[in-house]
Image (tube, rainbow, N blue to C red; front, side, top):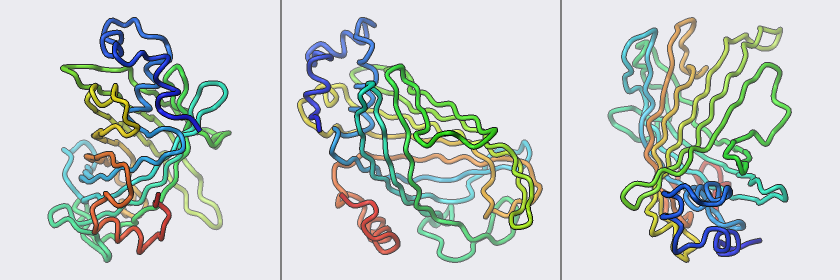
Length: 269
């Protein structure tokens, strides 16, 4: 295991990091190290994110409208690789609810796009991806299914008035699946994930392992099967706000209690 100092100190020269980046004179490895400080914790330590917001949807070319509330949390760790890339492992749990009242929907609610009842499918989902030194994001599970397209990138550092922004962007196309004797067919799916992270440069440059940071997350995806949209065309998006936490017990108590009741210690330290 390495500490934050061992992978950041020598190459980034902490006292002059922000000025060198703004002058575009930093070593080629600096942007990824900045992103790891912003998004993650040092190797061997967990990062937690707590988030909330809404899912919006539309049919055809109509304006978006809120259709569900969203609340969830994630736990992640990194593993440094000999080639300089970094494997990022995450597991997250999340819940949907009424867009006005919030809370968690444990029974059918109305799909505001159709007026028909739906039962949201809450989720527990893992993710394993690889960050490369040239700021690409690659799926760690390969080869990909036939016909699937997966593109990902980390945006370069954007520093303004002492604050740093960097984003992780994923653009995925899942090809149609023909019907079989045991499974219904489905059309092509698009999955677009835009996670924008922000922190103070003073925290990035500090000697502390944990860097306080916030996240603004937007998606643009195809309808979920449980939404019962039939042959309707359209899409959904999520708008989430998140905060980075150092420990599991810092999550909001109701969310923490619900995740533990459903999934035990799957997200614990």
